Amino acid sequence: MTNRYDVIIIGGGMVGLSTAYHLARRGARTLLLQADDLGGGSSAACSGRAQVAEGRLNPLNLRLITEGLTRLETLEEELGTAFEWRRTGFLALINSQHLWDEWTERSQILTAAGIPTEMLDQAALRNAEPHLNTAGFMGAAHAREGLLNPFLFCWAYAKAARRHGAALRPRTPVTGMRVEGRRVVAVETGAARYQADRVAIMCGAWTGRVARMAGVDVPIRHTHAEAFVTEPMALPLDNTIELANFYETIHGVEQAVSVGFSRDLRGALVVTEAVTQTAELHRKTAAWGLAGMAADLVKLYPALAGVRVVRAWGIPTPFSSDDEPLVGWLPGRDNLFVAAAFLETITAVPVVSDWMAGMILGEAIPADLSPFSPIRFSRCSGNVLCCRGEVTSPLQHKSLSDGLSND
Image (cartoon, rainbow, N blue to C red):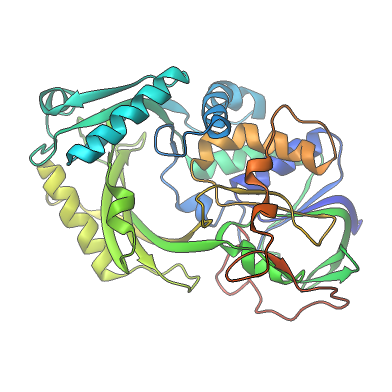
């Protein structure tokens, strides 16, 4: 078994697995290291939405959304594995005039970009979802997005990556990196040391912790998000439901609930989201979060009173200080790449992972990803990216095997 690769990816969620697939497809000798099961971190904890309407509306993000949706339509065939892809409606419920004005402008931009979005008044909202309690809402913004099974989505990429020769190592937490000069020369696990020409960190909220093993501080922040899934039921729900004031609700508040829900193919509801502002990385759930989501869900959809919860989970959700992803080479480390903090991850993954694989291998790519470059945080002050100089021996950090994930 070789310990030398062209590229090592740290993180086995949908971002890491999809990038491993595109690297291996290009013929690169690729190793992926994941602390727990493949797709076992935030990728497994997401609701499976291919979002289209809630992210930044700059040209690059709009291109990722439109091209990502197109790619998703044929991706099951490309990867050779079904992941329950289907298109569905999306409703952002609006309870104030300023949100109505904001979403009216947003709908115009999205529609012009090729993502038809319309504004529904309260009567039209009741017609779209007759069992929804519309009291207190002016109406909603409506668009067509997508849903898939995130477990199968990750598995589809994993199988395809292996088919093209990628080595995937689940339950193999990274414990350190060896840095000489400006290059990472080795990645260490508890059992082995691996070498590669290039190393890519793609492990979500844990990206900052892993990057510190290479002597780099990366400005990844996170909130702790909780969700639950119900028993299957016969429910006349045609759209994914979210609240348009989600970011207003959670901003600057230690704990908050902003409920949203969608239905999977078996009729179960995936219900989100209770949010805690915390520096701790953990997977625990709290009674207040589950109770708050359940209460708000029943207010919105009274027919759900009495439905049973099957399981609940919590996961750190990463973001950057400007709410744009971090994608690119890290300053101070010539061969260390990072990709984290995507907002509309599922929609972007089929396209951005292809582009990132090209970037890592030094190819010309069909888009300019410089707006996402970590160099925008390159000043060494506060919670921003800086390089702490040469590291000539593996840094000793708490292992990521303690229930945490390189995802």
